[in-house]
Image (cartoon, rainbow over all chains, first blue to last red; front, side, top):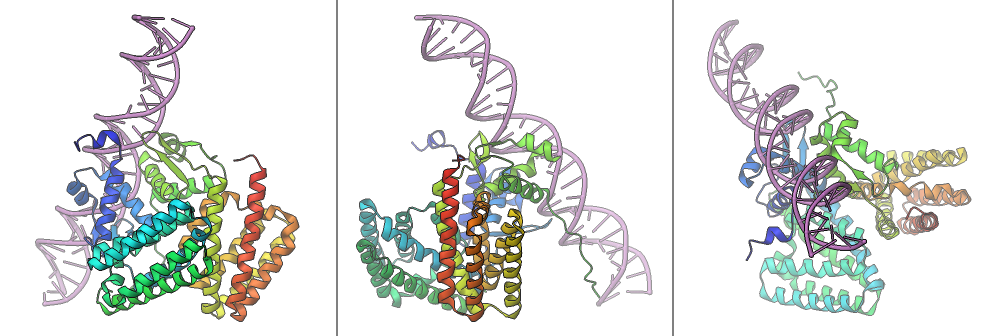
Length: 224
Length: 224
DNA sequence: TGGGTGTATATTGTATACAATTATTGTATA
DNA sequence: TATACAATAATTGTATACAATATACACCCA
């Protein structure tokens, strides 16, 4: 009975459109620089221009599209500089999150953390890239959640979205998988022990390594 | 031959409305919890509902207003927890910005930094709260700018906006003014010397002190 | 008296209509 | 052929019209 989905929870069309377009951009279905025309999208989604426009306003503020006055919206073109900048900020936020997690994690959080750490290992073993990406995200999200700082969670979320297109790069490099597992393990143990200093140190290395891999792979490709 | 004559800067109404409403919220002209009704705002601003709605979508994503489905927008009600969360993240970002500034500042930036540091002292001497607020913002902005990380600048800007209403709290406390000057001086010197470690240490203390003052003053007041 | 119920009204959600601007195309002319 | 330019189409920007829904309040009935 999926029919009463709409009855249970109401979502404005702008939210539906927003999520749809964001996913499309993130998944790479729309290419950087590609124009987003309102009527086209509206027709494709079966809605009017109004919700599409409102969704575009939101995407604009998220940095996923850029507006050219009287010309319209186009998918933001992320440069290597943008990517580096975002990762630089991300490292600071991850470092903060892991520090706060050490101080504030509760029993429930610890269980979740252990579970996600295990799940990540399984994902690695599966050698399925999408599963690994998801496993890594889940792991980091548990830590953010344990920080109990909603503003931090939101800020990190937004930051991640803007470079989400390149998230696969650092798990496609299979040679680094063993390191990933070891780093996750060390971070997990440090948090469980409440050892903020160690946790931060490992986390910063962890993010730095990812940074290098992503930047190397992206730079070598020709997408920029 | 193309002449680079100054083009007419066109601003869509949604941007005008957005800026107007944001300022009104930030300045406290709209109180937390106050409803923002589209027709009322549209009439007051002499535009139609469309630009108002788009502006509200943007304010929503910035966290300055919250939407209640089919009920409308209201000014976000910032709790002490929200404030603490935001300041916690801000500390991490300021710390990063000062570290990067140490590594990347150029001659022009150094001159600007010295100038803003001096200007802040003059603002303090003037004992005018708005001037002091502005002077402090300018000082920190120069450091952000010197970090040469646009994503960091944007993220910090957004974060600041959400707690902007309480920005005056920490300069209203005149007893702390001497410390403010000293901290700014120390940070400036550390950056000029390129001593990232010291700069970060002072900056973190600087933000922490501000945090304590703001939270103490806000908690004592009755606005929450 | 209390509580539910229907109706009026206000407000948001969505669609469409109109205006302003930009891009495109075709054509005339040197 | 290349260019200037006018006509036309396409697209965004803005306003308005219509639909759906929540709120308030009066009213009815047990």
